[in-house]
Length: 76
Image 1 (tube, rainbow, N blue to C red):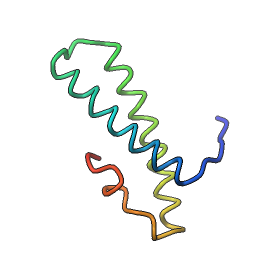
Image 2 (cartoon, rainbow, N blue to C red):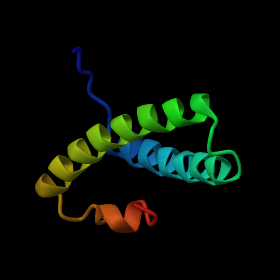
Image 3 (cartoon, rainbow, N blue to C red):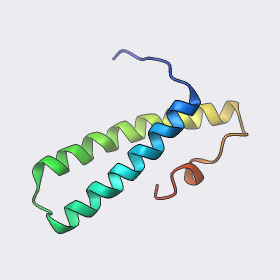
Image 4 (cartoon, rainbow, N blue to C red):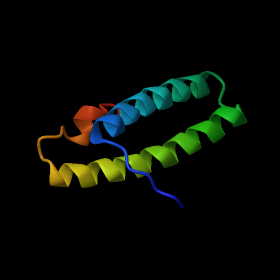
């Protein structure tokens, strides 16, 4: 897998947007639980979120002034 560098600021924004979108998809799945496209999309987003969260936590180890992940993405 190829990796790229992004700023912590970009990572923070991406995590917040991804968290909001995942919450929206979860709400849609409550109303239509059999929608396979939404389920697949949520799974893809979840995998991306786990990877980005890991990178964020690594960055936070180096810079403790960054907010805790739970504060950054409250629904996490």
